Length: 269
Image (tube, rainbow, N blue to C red):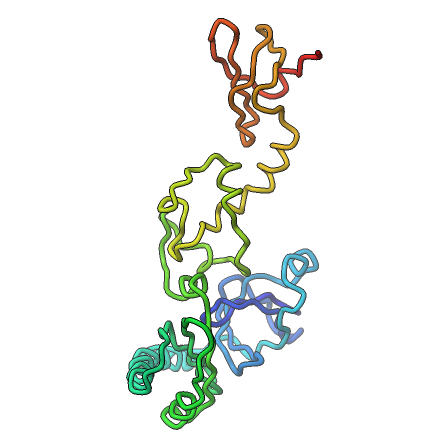
């Protein structure tokens, strides 16, 4: 049986096989898996049905589940987690000593000890060959440097968004959706950058979620300024709300009323 799991600091997703003779695994179960990076801790999300697999990227990693996480595994995971903060400080000291212009974001110590991944933000490309050589000697394992952008930095560090819930990028998003000011304008969101920007300083991912519906509805709705026939006579459209499918009109006597789209029709010239 195959399951979709989430693993790693960047909350990667993969499809991992489990023994057909083993008992079914359920959402939230912690397991040890084999990935291309080594042995890692993962969380079961769901069974890998055809419907669920269709929602995932085509190049998603496939491998196997080694075992359900044991008490010894949990103790080792805590030890590694505690060691990461000390490893991070050691790495920072070395970066400072070498005068490398990069901002360290996080160190991820792979559970099986096969490698340490160092996430960093920097302007342009960095020559970190000397840094990798020193760190490999310090930690006695393979060192992988991974340059990330500000949105991925938020994914690694942020917790709660303006909505009061976990930031989407650090909870369930697989890929960062493209977001533009056009989406904010179409949804009549405030254009105040401080209010429509997320923890990363970029436009909020949630502006993308309803855009397709807004866009589709907007194309099918009447346009501003159009003369329409309402149950109360002819009027001019002065406002459109695509989400609720409501139209605000103004009559010749300056009366303003709201109607649902199905209540009105375009006047024929």
